[in-house]
Image (cartoon, rainbow, N blue to C red; front, side, top):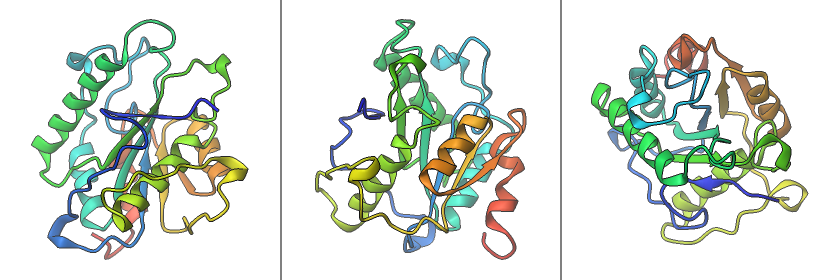
Length: 213
């Protein structure tokens, strides 16, 4: 199966969620976001170190707007450099710590609730690697469990084994590649493709529509 990895902890470790802005009650909406080309500038030879992290213009405020509108944020990112032997999980954790810090400096509501990643190379056939939907499946179950059963360790199911699936009609996946859109289709959530030079800020109005800030 080769399941997803979770930034900073075991995949099934209890997830602690920060309160949504203005103590808004979460109604189940998730914004699944690719990382490079959506939140930060992607590089041809990978984002290899924390100092390589440069956020795209407006990504911080766009993320804050989504959370103020009641979305939980789940980043889902392919990170094959790990299994290619270029660098390790600890290096990726440093990259993500830097990303979170920059976003929060720009907008205090720009909290990433959960980061999941696939460290696998394309030829390993992982269910977690996009265009497969494993990271989205795990993200939904982790966020639902943290909301309804705080402190519990969720059992995460994949593919045909996960039968009791929630409605994802109010959720969205934003990515800059066809693999992201195929993952959205496979999972059954609306996919929105953005320009990798513009990222999340260029599509946040389309996600929220009028009167949803």
